[in-house]
Length: 249
Image 1: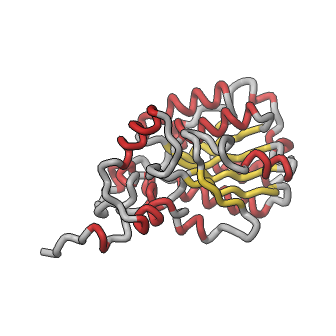
Image 2 (image 1 turned 90 degrees about the vertical axis):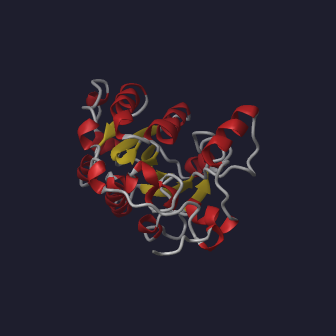
């Protein structure tokens, strides 16, 4: 029997576990509702020809790789990473995408300014994990499948607020300097950072579009209600195939 890996010798904050892909749906595309009636009045090919930004949120080793703090949620097998890669490549080929933003989200927040609410909530996430700085850095790192798509001039940053990059970062200023009108969102978690950033984008006068199959909630059963809420009130929710098709104008 193999000896257990010492915590300090591991690169990962948690002992890697095996998940059965059959325990997870390979995509959430079937949970994405039709566009709300008000969005159906719009020409999305035209909208997606305007100055646009791509925002990938919290697509890190923590979520997709064994030993990551959030790996047990099964996102590695639920299709969001593959859909994101497809969407990024399509956006790179479209000349109007003037800003690419890779937004990290660390669940290790000991060194973040905290309210009393933050303090107890953040401790509930990782307070029980005795992780080294190197393990935390690995957990926070952009997943390799996306790291290889990063280009010089892209914006890499971390959220410092609870659920949005529009507070406490340079994102709003960067988008303004590029005269961005449209933002396209992918990432984790659908009902947290994706919804939070979509709401904030609307309040900043932007046009957010969520690529639904390139996102995911902690559990698949949480996704239908989140898709419906976002799609009805805050942003159109589309598939990666629709996104690619509408860009090929």
